[in-house]
Every structure is written in structure tokens, then in C-alpha cells.
Amino acid sequence: HSLPSLDLDGVACYMMSPKCRRICVMAGAGISVSAGIPDFRSIATGIYNSKATTAYSSLPTPQHMFDNEYFLSDQAPFYSFFAKDLFPSATTKPTRTHHFLRLLSQKGLLTKMYTQNIDSLERLAGLPPDKIIEVHGSLATASCAECGKSCDAQRMAKTIRRGGLPTCEKCGGAQKPDITFFGEKLPFLVREQMKLKMPDLRNCDLLLVIGTSLAVQPFAGFIDKVPRGCPRVFVNKGAVGSGRAGEYDDKGGQHMWGALGNYRDVLLEGECDRIILQLASKLGWMDELNGVVKE
Ligand code: OAD
Ligand code: ZN
Image (cartoon, rainbow, N blue to C red):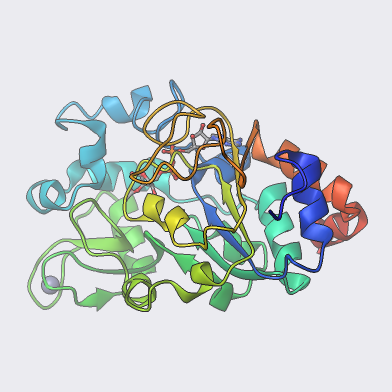
């Protein structure tokens, strides 16, 4: 087995070995929390639990904010959320975790980063666009929710922030940013990857899963695309998956850091920036990481 021990030391040791050349990353909202962007499911502070969201009492559940069918019938809650809370501000900065991923890429170790985040902080941190798969789309582009005709995202954003209703010039339907809502197809690039059976995941030596509750499919299922011998490292604060940390079990029960016979799954529990810094330090990458941050 590849990992000398199922802990931070084991992960660092493996990463320094010649066996670990192709790393894939799967990330979620947790990696942007220290940049000031709330996640979805954290108790009290998550978008689905905070007062800000539940204040939209017209919504059956907070998740309806990002529900396609609901949006088609009533755009007001999403538009108001978009105007106030969704756009990362001009001063939002990538985190240490984002910078570490950029360093991984610079070292030629990163093959793909699959992110559920729509904040574009990966790009801002300087990760090459061809390394990033925005699984739930991004705010960079926008289109009509009825007919799909693309539109100017900046113009749409301006209209929404002014309190207006941006509509399609072709069919009059409501416009929305190209972020994936529940009940919607994933972006073309992701569908292509899935059709090709996720080649980067299939050929990977290490999977880093950072800051995601793994609650949303098909993303959560990507962790099962890597080879059986591939170590998987989960860097997360608190709950992961359907149960609490250590309880997450998909069909195969192959990824349980607490389970008997586990040989490849490591849970590093805590704030990702802190754990990533510890890892960088064990790898002897601190100077380079600080260099990336200064750029
Ligand atoms: P969640 O809010 O579901 O999960 C974020 C995870 O990050 C939680 O398990 C937190 O405990 C953890 N976390 C928070 N802060 C952290 C920190 N500083 N360091 C480490 N971990 C931290 O967010 P996602 O898993 O990204 O989809 O959510 C997945 C999808 O659900 C989103 O893309 C969005 C949402 O509905 C759509 O809107 C389609
Ligand atoms: Zn239209």
C-alpha cells in the first residue's frame, strides 16, 4: 500500500515519493470560507441555515433559492440574494488553500481541480484554466433560463443590482448566471468529462478532497472514480457526507477512514488553511508557498 501511515506525515511522505505524480483535487465551499464567502451547510453560518436566507419566507426551503423550477416561477428570491450576497466583492482574495493548489500546479503535480465553487477564486489564485473544472458552473457567464440564449453577464448583474428584471431579448425569459441549479444539467465540459469516464480521476495517484460536505451528486460520487489503490485525503472541518465525519459510506463502503481494513483514506479534520499550511511545511514548501501568495 502506498501510504506509510494514515495521517498527515504519511500523506506528506507519499507526496514526496516518486509514486505521487498525478494529483486530483475535489473542492467545495469550505475552501473559500476564510475568504469571507459562507458555505452552504455549516450550522448557523451556512447559506442554507443563516437568517439571511431563511428571511426569504416565500421559499419552501432555503435550497429553493437554487432550484431551477422554482426560479422559472419566481425569480425574486434568487435575484435579491444575487444582488446582496452572492457576488464575491472586488476585494475578495484567494485563500492559502487556493495558493497551495496553484503551487501544486506549478510543480506539475496537479492534473485537475474539480470545484463546486462559483466564486472563481481558483482562477484568481492563478491556476491555469485548463486545470479547473467548474462542476457547478460559474458567475463569469450568463444565459436565459427559458431558451438558453447566452447574454452579457455584467449587464445582467447590473440590472439585478438596480432591482430590475433582466430578460432575454429572444424569448423574454428570465436571465440567470450560468451556475448550476438543482434540476439543471451540469455544464457541457463536465458532461464531456463524465462521458469520457473522468480520465484524470482514473489516472490519479492521490485525491485531495477539501472543504466539501459531499452532499450533492454527481460530484460526491467522483471520489469513487479513482483507482482502488489511490489514496484519498479528506481535509474538512466537521461533517462530511450523509453522516458525521467517519460515517460517510457510499454503496461500496470503500472510503471510510474509521473502518477496519481501511488502507487509503485519511481524514484531516480542521480548518483547511491550517492543515494545508502544516502539509506545506512538512513538504518543505513554505518559502515557495509564500512566494505564490506575494505574486
Ligand atoms: P457545504 O456547505 O455543503 O459543505 C462545506 C463543508 O466545508 C462543510 O462540511 C464544512 O464543515 C466545511 N468547512 C467549512 N469551513 C471550512 C474550513 N475553513 N476548512 C475546512 N472545511 C470547512 O458546501 P459544498 O459541499 O461545497 O450547489 O456544497 C455543495 C453544493 O451544495 C454547492 O456547490 C451548491 C450547494 O447546493 C448548488 O448550488 C448546485
Ligand atoms: Zn430566452
